[in-house]
Length: 443
Image (cartoon, rainbow, N blue to C red; front, side):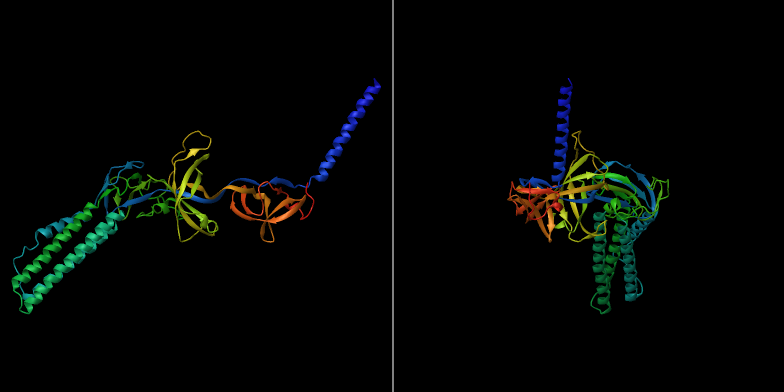
């Protein structure tokens, strides 16, 4: 009985000694160096950049003149089509101007009756007509400059320019006719006819331009999209949504706390007051800032994966549309370049369904897949170290560690492509490279 216990105790003691020796042996050989093998696979290089969601376009409609918001036909969030009437303003000043122009047109001479006082009177009438025309053109240009829709504003400015050129030609003809009378080469009736034509033309143009200014009080959607009352929210940093809504938009400055800055129906508006904004969200995009060290890798057509701070767990596909030529100062103080992308519909990575539609101005992280190598010799990124300024991999050759200079290709987050220096299947050091010496024995 005691012999059996002794034998069991001896056996247990031997096992314990063996385990201790094994542990000591392992400690003696545990140098912290881990070996791996160069393999063949696919490597994708990712460039990560901060960005924000952008709308296709946006336009803020402003009051073209002082008056009141007589009729507001939409609310924030309404979808509208291009050309829809959104609001109508009432401006007594513009209506009085049009009424006066209509009255002047009705009183314009029809061609008969010469001013008394000879050619001097003709000259004075022509100068007065020129002054009236110049004033009408200036008022029309001021009204045009208050129009937020760039297309409509340009149309009205061209209309003013065309009217001015047409009147100048008529005024020059009247001046030539008066001079001809002075030199005795034309009859008085010809001068009367030319002067009357210039007066009628001036009166008609003054009415047409005043009528166009009144028509501009009817605010129509310049694009299809979603309505937001008022202008874009103020942004002290000068970025985000305010930067997005820069086409004819003016930020609401210093709104009173607790008061809706949007103009209510029946409220007074000063010239240039933002009444509403139409945002075209039919095609959302992204604006990303790529560092100068990476931007040469980014080309139109490059695919990207996007994550939004507002949609945790969702990813959105995107494609590079263009890369700006001129740089901007990045948020980190360095030089970066703006990259514009088209944004697709997202999905949750857990397969739970479609991701929500982003809103313009939302922050994003953009991962651009700039390069990819297939069937490439790859090693873990941890295996590549810098020795004397050259990319190097520690490999096992003939049972010893050797430092091998390598030329790298596509650099992924975890693995890199080795173009030359290492072949597939070769044993390499993947961890503990700082503990390896050239020529030392390898296991």
